[in-house]
Every structure is written in C-alpha cells, then in structure tokens.
Length: 385
Ligand SMILES: [Ca+2]
Ligand SMILES: [Ca+2]
Ligand SMILES: [Ca+2]
Ligand SMILES: [Ca+2]
View 1 (cartoon, rainbow, N blue to C red):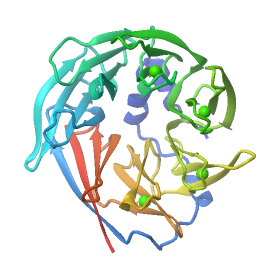
View 2 (cartoon, rainbow, N blue to C red):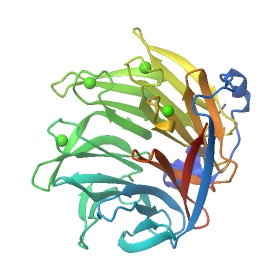
View 3 (cartoon, protein in one colour):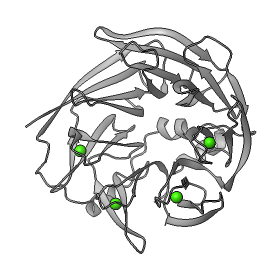
View 4 (spheres, protein in one colour):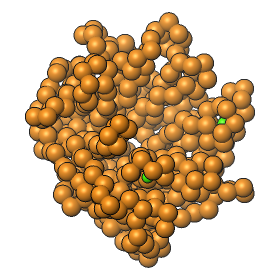
C-alpha cells in the first residue's frame, strides 16, 4: 500500500515532517491482525496521567528540548517553532510555563533542536533550519549571535548529537530528508567544527541513531532511508571504517527509531514507527540476525518513539505518539508481556516528546510539543498499585 505523502513532501520542497504531519491519511488498517495481543496483566499497577496543557506564544511547535542549565532547580523547556522560526526558552513553575527569553529567530522554519555540552555543561542549543541547510548553535546562558554551520543546499530535518570519533567531545550530524545525509561536524576542541564525510550517502533519511549497537566500544550508525526503503546499520570497525548492513528492507515511511534492549538479554534491539502503520515494529537481536515482532496499537499511524522506564523498575518501556490521532500511548514492557496504556485526554498534533525522570521522588514527566493551538503539554505520570 502506497501513499503520496512523501511525493507531496518532495514536490513542494517542504520538510517531510511538516508534509507528513500535516496530512492525515488513514492507511495500514489491514495490519492490526498481525499485532501482538496485549495481555491485560501489568507489573506496575495502574498508571494515571495528569495533563497540563500550557498555552505559549509560538504556534506550530515542531521540536522541544529540556534543560536545567540555569541552576534554578526547575525544568527549562526550549521550543522551536516551525512557522515563525522562533526559539524560546521557558521555565516550568507551579503556576505554569514562564517565558524566560527569546533565544533567537531564524528566517525560515525550525525543524529540530538538540542540546549539546561545550566546556562541561549542557549549555548549547543546536537548531536545524529547513530551507537553507544550516545549523545554528546558540548559547543558552548568554545572549550572543549563534555560530552557523553550513551543511549543503538541502534542508536539514533533524539533528543528532553524538561523539562519532570517540574523542570525548560532542559532534553534530545533520539529517536531511529532502537531500542527502552525508556529512558530520567534528568538534575540534577549540569551539570550532570541521565538516567531515559520513561513511554513507543516503537520500531521504528520516531518522538516525548513533550508538554502539554491537557493544564493541565504538559508535555505529543506524539510519532509516525512505529512498532505499531500508534501515541500515553502519558498523564501525574501530578505526572509523564502516560496513553497511541492511537490517530491514522494503519498509515505507519510517519516521522514528529507538534503540533499546527490550527483552533484556544484553543485546540492543531496535523499535521503529512509521506513518504508514499502526504497529510498533520490534527487531530483537539474536545471534543470526533479528526476531521480528509487531506490537499493535489502537492508533492509525505513529510518528515518534522514545524509550523511558515507567516505574523505574529497570525494564525499559516505550512512549509513542500519533499526530493523526492526537494521541500519546505508553507501551509497558511488563514481565507478562507488552501492554498499551491509553491517555484519555487528547494531545493535539504531537510533534516531539521529551521525558524527564526525577529519581529522587520516582516521578516521570512527559513533555510534548504540538503543531496546533500554541500548546506544549506536560504530563505527570503517577503509578499506583
Ligand atoms: Ca567527537
Ligand atoms: Ca560498535
Ligand atoms: Ca535484546
Ligand atoms: Ca519499566
């Protein structure tokens, strides 16, 4: 089954995430029968949700990041606005979301924000720009012009921060859906970045994770390419040479990947979601390859997936969002099997998810940005036996 969503994205030259997220087409209905039947038993008891919908000035927030760099003991929320190009810093207080200041404004659309450490603290916001193929690095503490890195003629749709070369310094990888994903920026230790070539050149990349997937001490790269309809693993030989391995092919519209040891056997597994299917796809690593497992949800399409630990019990769980269904769901990785928890309240047009766990009082907060109605959501999770 095919959709024309990606073609719309291509022909308009607009960012895939906007193009994909803006159009609700319900497909993949036939897949529900393949999903795993979710058992009704749970290991964490009842999950209850307290949803705070904060009204903010910016419309169409496509991305958010969480910080606590200001040392106030409160959570700071950085929002990136797709339509206005504004980056704003908020602080969550007992009364609501308090705007601290504007971090910057770009001439165009913001597609992603990630935080990065330079000089020891998580003090930089790396912002990707759809139209001009640039990355901007803003200082969160000082009001100063951003450092600008030029990626290439195509827009940047996501950005990853990872230490690709293993020198202990954060590097930056721009991900382009409209063009090619083929470079990274190496942190030169002196507040500068050198443009380097990635071991691959993939078109229409929708998601990338830099992680030591085979756990041999060096960073490998996982990439989902819509052009190739494939998820590839670029395995690092320890000397910066990468070998490509196709680990899933013939797949369409993958929007997000998570890497997690879901079955807790010591080997990292992959979970991914796509706009075409209402199942979470699990690839569980075994000695020969992967065991595939589908987790059915009561949603029509899925756009974000994040790993967190519901109940802090050491068993990793998943959060998924659906733009089309205005929904957030938890997939609890209970001992008896996987279980979906539904949040009853609507979360309008969710675009990005961040999770914060306070280990002291065992509290989990989920923050969600929204394309609709100037909203950012803060969801308080409570677990009762
Ligand atoms: Ca590095
Ligand atoms: Ca490795
Ligand atoms: Ca595993
Ligand atoms: Ca858990």
